[in-house]
Length: 135
Image (cartoon, rainbow, N blue to C red; front, top):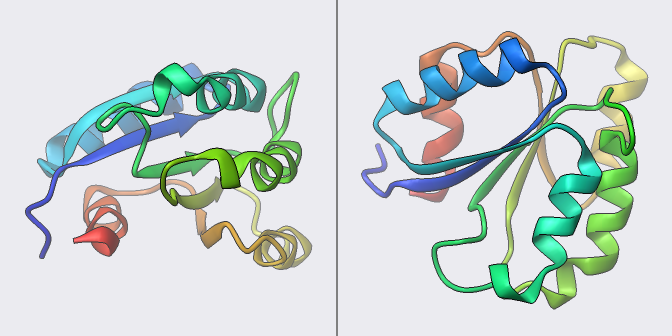
């Protein structure tokens, strides 16, 4: 089990999910910071800003929802693939959705940046397992 604390990014337009996920993630004891964004554009703007490329600012892991306003998860992933070369390191991305649609699961696997597709809700043990991937 990892003892390395991760910088986590939640990209989801659901305030209740963000609040709950943040509480559960903090309860794992495996996070050093948790940044939240309500849509993919906010997150892309943050990741694209070179001022945020210093050590400890970029997330180690992103939990990405699919269905959001302004920029959904699919458009985020397409844009992320365009900018990831400019980032100082790789970021683990989990697509997190309540959708059990096989076409969504398969589509997420078409992105090399996506580590896995995770179905909501996520309990503390599952978050602990996902956070340990870098440990």
